[in-house]
Image 1 (spheres, rainbow, N blue to C red):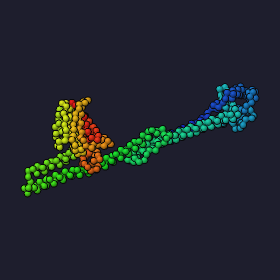
Image 2 (image 1 turned 60 degrees about the vertical axis):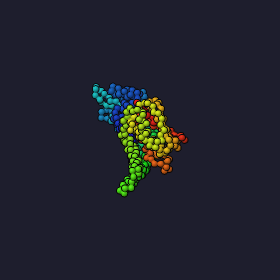
Image 3 (image 1 turned 90 degrees about the horizontal axis):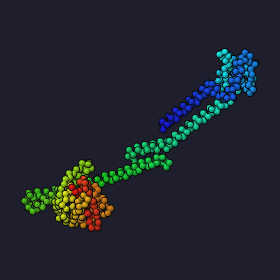
Image 4 (image 1 turned 90 degrees about the vertical axis):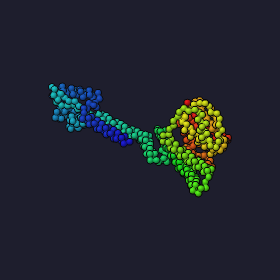
Length: 432
């Protein structure tokens, strides 16, 4: 808007200079600018008669039309006049120019000997006044138009952009509570509305971020407790073994059971730490898998490794080659079996189907399943369902998230289905 004010000021100055120049040049210039054709003819007739009778002007033939005139010599003395002109004794070529009276010089033998002036200049002054009035009115209307247009531009364009600038500043400062004011007649209404939609989305995003941060803090607290439990068990078991070894009270069978308990607790810690580490690597974009062609029969060995309760009911695996990272697929299947142990505790059935470039592996249990509203959430990071909230089971909320992430890294897919008869996890393992 500052530049607009400068433009208006410059325009006003230029118009003022133009009007001043018009007054100056028309005042100092030739009076012919204001003559009409009839005045020019009469002036020429008088000038010719004065030149022909310069020695004795009494012999001049005057025009039939009654006009006011005066004939002067070079010393501005009145030689002859019509008798009804005004201020003839004060008249000169200079005053004629100033008053815009038409005039002609009288030339005899190539020399200027006098001048003829028409003293009836009221019509020319009237024309002059009209021209000045029209010029002033035009200038005023032009300035008024620029001011009105400037007000319109300020209200419809400049002010909305200033509002957007202030709004952007508030957004940059993190102030998302003040909405962007919108005028229904604003030509940038849709544009400004999109900015306010962005503000609302940022508010929701911040709320989600705060909720996630809270959930992560809760998870850290919960995992700290989960890690503390097996560590305490390992510590107590170790202290008990040491005490019995010192007193000679331990036997081989009891020693084997205690060592097995230590190993089991250590495996729990290792699983928790591995899930946290994998999740962190995925967040940093540095988690890598190395896929290569393997026989699908490796899946049977993976199941054997993790089915320490013997609950998996196996079916025949097709003789195909799959493109996998064995270690990653082992973690996927291990996490699924571990979840089934934890939440269902029933027999686990496996089925295989080859379809559209994938080996479909279905792992189903016969537990309570997952509520429909939670089914799409169980593979989210740090999500733990109702059982955890009601204190019926432990977990980090990373098992199925890690499993899904690993399947996607291997160009496969993990899906979940649930019914009243249990939960089914579907693994789409890519074929070679």
